[in-house]
Picture 1 (cartoon, rainbow, N blue to C red):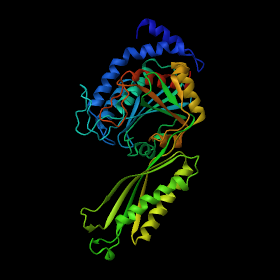
Picture 2 (cartoon, helix red, strand yellow):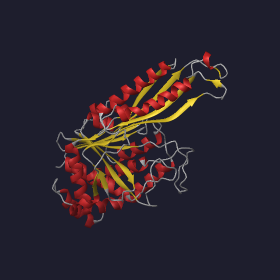
Picture 3 (cartoon, one colour):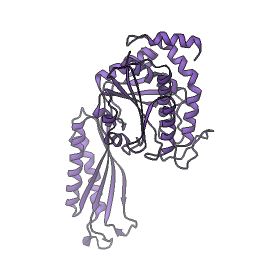
Length: 413
């Protein structure tokens, strides 16, 4: 850190929650000085992606970095999760900051010099960037942070549908590392770098994965009267499921029931024994989610019975509706506007039907989840879960600055 930036940052550190954007210029400048090191970490993580609950190399890098900077480090939380804790002063206040670490089972097609070296695995959602952001914030807070209270930095495994957040909570995350509030961010392609988006209340939908197995009685296609065709029953179930959102959900509430896959049989002249449907189900509130589950179970069971078959329903909750608590969201918004200016904030009018594992954490604690601009067009605009996607390194400083400013505003000395 240059002497000029050090002096400016010292002045910033004396401010409290009323700090305006100009006072954060030194914070951004200081973070940009260390930015190359965290870009290098991000590229290293990108080249060595690991799937959910397999993030051993990533967790080791995170743990070693945090320990080097003076954090008390706990590994193996919820499998491969890592928590870094840093205490200063005597305040009982504590804040949780979360980043996800896992990659996706996708073959990378970017052609980048730091492209994935692991077959059919890549950081196609930017979790390498999220990890680098929280590490950059961790380093800054350890070296220069002015706060009174406890930082709990949560590096979560298995966000991509495997329940990493729930596993960490089951392993005592918030009893072992108490937090008053918890915060997270996610990159957003199509939003300019240095820009943020958020809303009060429900931010993202719940996500449930449902498998319906229809069992009939197999037979020869020339003698269908001696069989109970699970394919016909499954087809009837698919059509009946379409009535749930149209006729069982209040029109002002959002819901999604998608049948994404049907598997049955291997030959055109054989009636199979079973047929399997795979569904994705989403809602923005718990009541709607419960209604969807109840109706899916009823329809599957009764439609199958009407065709002389049976149906079993395996209903698995991936995430809950992610609700941004009012006070936490006010703090997040105030921090964004102080850091980047009111023009750099989009207040989302509606919730997004995507989902996030972080919702398990906001079910247990008040918190807030924000979107961070990843860029537009060819520079950061490629959508996530795409073989051509890459996290935009220019977003690292903005994400880290928000985490730092948020922590110091909440834990102000």
